[in-house]
Amino acid sequence: MSGKENRSAASLGPVGVVGLGNMGLAMAANLVRSGFTVIGTDLLPALREALTKAGGAAAADTAEVAARCRRIILSLPSEGALQAVTEALETSGQAGTIVIETGTLPLAAKVRARDRLAERGVTLLDCTLSGTGAQAKTGDLAVYASGDTQAIEAFRPIIAGFSRACYDLGVFGNGTKMKFVANLLVAIHNVSAAEAILLGVRQGLDPAQVVEVIGDGAGSSRMFQVRGPSMANRTWDVPMITNRLFQKDLKLIGEALLAAESPAPLFNATLPFYTATLATGHGEHDTAAVYAVLERLAGLGPAKE
Image (cartoon, rainbow, N blue to C red; front, side, top):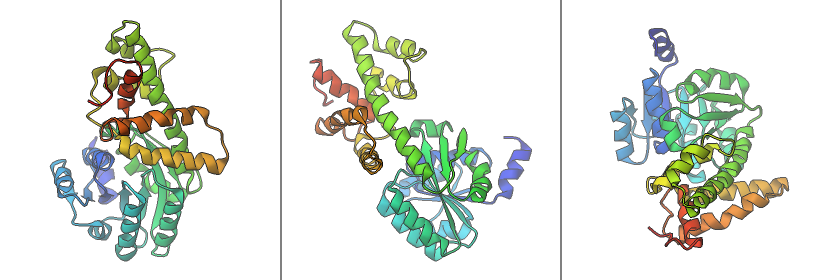
């Protein structure tokens, strides 16, 4: 980053990050590298220490982040976590603060949080992320922003510090709705990648070569490129997102499909394979482990490894 850009980052003041899991810590580290002062917190001391090692400053809790920052990123794992953080921001948030909620959570929970924080003078934006934890580390994220347009524009320079693209999708909630669309495709493409690589193996091809060649062709997908190597190298024990956590996303997609009365035969066809990952010992492994489930169906060995 140039000196001019560094001064610009400094002029925006410190950026808060609440939730330092795979995504939150990666975003925080990229913001530090982009010249921002980052103040973050997490319930786990080890993650607060990791932020310090990345060049950020660890805060004791959400209240401290809210007291020190007017721009805050939430990267939370559950609806319960959002409720707890909202309560802290209601008490400690400063009027004029802008908060972006980046998690894949029920839209109704985000709307409740938005309305409660508005009474404090705090603006909440629904800004979901497209990308894995590994992609977050390299800044290869797309942000689906929704809510107040002026607030999105005010936050855009910060978003640019940890992502490659930001889309203003209009009214609050459209970010979450777009993430459901994206995750539906992720679910399908992940299983289709495993199915295609296994076909190559069953025909006697080298799986790494299948990933290299097909990944560069018309039949590829982003998921094939991102998760294909994990399938070929059998490295799903290093998760970008665990199968257990992905169950939450699958449930939310299913609820969105029912509410929209939208048929989804391909998505529904993938669900048994994700369920099977849990039943065969891959719950804490990456979703690339659906490959192991398909291997077992092909009689190539047990899915539990």
